[in-house]
Length: 292
Image 1 (cartoon, one colour):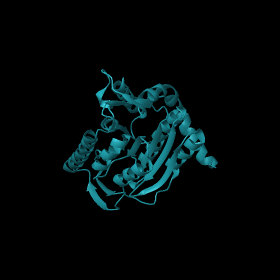
Image 2 (spheres, one colour):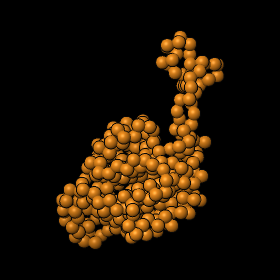
Image 3 (cartoon, one colour):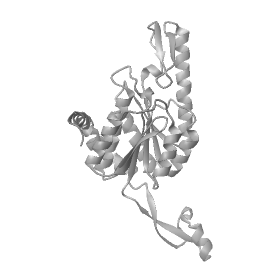
């Protein structure tokens, strides 16, 4: 049973996102994700003109004659939300924290999935996987997923993306659409991301805040790393300090994007100071063009 105050918050998110789910993303979600999963329905002998990429080499070797796989679309999808709940998400310099933006975006994706009769599951992680909600269908299940994204209290403070992806590969036996939601202020996740994307369709959702990219000239500021707890005094009045900060942020973002390119993982980039509707729409249109 979801408490009434939490239910009110979920309802507010549902109202804010309803038009996007029903009008903007409904058709695009289906065209982008539906039918991307396949299963082998049968094996038959090869005939000239068949796609050689579908040759079943095991059956071909056993029989001595070339055989191909006949595939059938899997109309039912599994959508998994893998959400970073580390302490760096509890930051926001504009209208809301990164965690709040991530929760609303997860709600949009979850409502889109349930509207298309797909299963939705949830992984919440910090430096370890802290919560796993197995994929299920249905509105009540999706409400529970959104509640957990909004109100789960994490035990850890740091980020371990490889741990979450290794857990994903253990629990998800069939191919799933995985939205990996994080600020990606982390390192050492490239190989785990590459492996996960060979087994699943992984989409990275990068959640950021403008103050992570540049500092305003407001004088001496005490800055604390949310994950390590380390504090430093920063003189933002100095132009050279602001320039070094912006340069470090730019290099970090460029390296993150190179990782996505090398692992062939698509990305959705959202910020706390901008509406996410346009970025979601851009992503779905890009996917539509690719699969059309």
